[in-house]
Image (cartoon, rainbow, N blue to C red):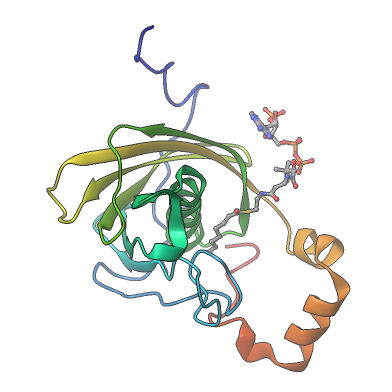
Length: 193
Ligand SMILES: CCCCCCCC(=O)SCCNC(=O)CCNC(=O)[C@H](O)C(C)(C)COP(=O)(O)OP(=O)(O)OC[C@H]1O[C@@H](n2cnc3c(N)ncnc32)[C@H](O)[C@@H]1OP(=O)(O)O
């Protein structure tokens, strides 16, 4: 079977430029929501993904695989690795475009096993934009920024209105945020930048 992936992006796109207010390279973002499984600081066995702005539209992300992330003995669960890419690419889109967006499609190539104790170094970039559709991709390397390539991911994010979150989120969690806004650890993006 061929391992050659289909053309990317799959449609004609315009170049996705970083927003003028996107944070400069080296800026560390911290979690965006206390209870986010990808980055939240109040999720005991979450990924605690650390993210930082890179050059151009790049985002650098890291997380260390713990015992709680196993799929097979001593190896990371593939779904959690995909989650790390979803989060890293979500930060890439959110921070570099400064627009709220959700994952519409995420594909992941698992190229090498990722043992417990490894640190995955992920770099995500924007590949193009077509209307509300934003294409982004990422690579993940083991234990160092130039370590062995372990994963690749490609994703379509769809830009949404903030109503998406208010209309679909569970009422008690929305209430908790209304009562304690600091659960949202970062300020809101521009809606019409
Ligand atoms: C800083 C923040 C970090 C956060 C990181 C984590 C990010 C996440 O995990 S978000 C959570 C997971 N994602 C979701 O829950 C999204 C669930 N899906 C939805 O709500 C909707 O399907 C949504 C919003 C994606 C699209 O719906 P809607 O707004 O009605 O737009 P719709 O017209 O269907 O799609 C827009 C375009 O995207 C395309 N599209 C949407 N989904 C797909 C897909 N799976 N594959 C291919 N194309 C797609 C459509 O074909 C359409 O294209 P065109 O404009 O050319 O016709």
